[in-house]
Length: 44
Image 1 (cartoon, one colour):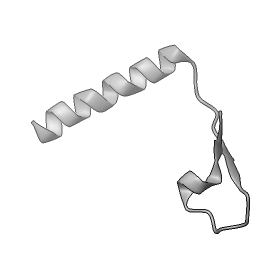
Image 2 (cartoon, rainbow, N blue to C red):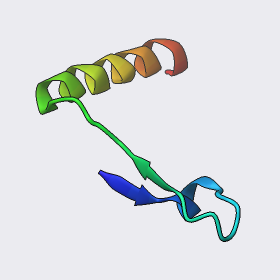
Image 3 (cartoon, rainbow, N blue to C red):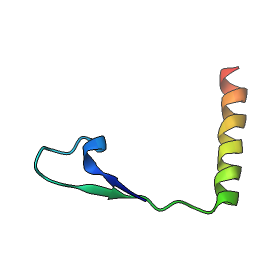
């Protein structure tokens, strides 16, 4: 995924962009479940 740098506080006129590499969906699903478990355990 490529995102325009203005969303990340770039200096005007520098024309940066950010490239994001995401893991596969199965890895993301496990990661999100782990984050949810942590939040439930520490913030509920």
